[in-house]
Image (cartoon, rainbow, N blue to C red; front, top):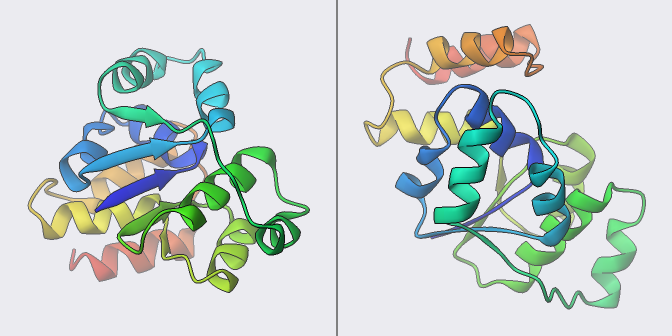
Length: 162
């Protein structure tokens, strides 16, 4: 399985020291150039972990040839979301788009691209035995400035069986 990721989930994982989960869950982790640019410009305490991931297992896919119909759907989104969705649309069915942006997820759904967000990835990691507590990680995310609503937090903890 391949993961194509937008910027936010990678930053969130780095903030809690869990960016390696991407490598442990997927055969390939791919980002488009704008996501790379956004990650490369990150200067917070998580930047070291992001740099290590970019240098070891996160691959940048540069040539993204998106169909016209897809370009029309992508209008109005941020450039990182546009490129991530466009890239995922060009890959085979064995791809998950890691994206937290609601508008982007709605576009991806219209394009029949399977998406999950950072919380969904943490739930998969728990299923695979890669993390012990989703609730603890969600609280850590919030403590490190990653915005998650109370409803999302409660739902995720319930889905994790915690």
